[in-house]
Image (cartoon, rainbow, N blue to C red; front, side, top):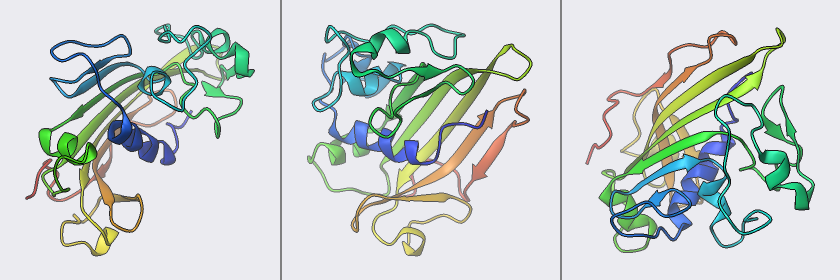
Length: 210
């Protein structure tokens, strides 16, 4: 099982930029903590409580199952006929429901990222975000195996790899002509699949460069 496609990175970035994070000083029911600038919960819930996304049959948060490739995806998305493939953990309609995964997700951002995404300040190279995901899949040996993926992402402005803030060795994500981001560190572990350790490491790999 290979990790979720690189396009998922852009989706996670958009979620953090457009979500209305609630509950100052505490985590809301979906997993957001506005004061700490953290999301900590199930991947589905990073989307399900936000406008424009399917919120489940009762408009309540998804409750996943640790150690299970599919968890409760089939029942949560039953009304829209989405099912999970245990061999990959992927939904049957990933283009329309790219968040229908039984995956644990933690997102951390700093103040520069938060203020820029909410239009309170301009983007700067000090803005950063981290993602940490844990998921499971059914291997050819008939057993469930775990994968884990950690990323550091920074804003580098327009121009992608031609930006003065770009760092050699990173992976560029473009979101429109004015905004580019760079994955400056990617660590992926899936022992059964033969993946372990650092995939991407920019130089320097620290979070802020402004």
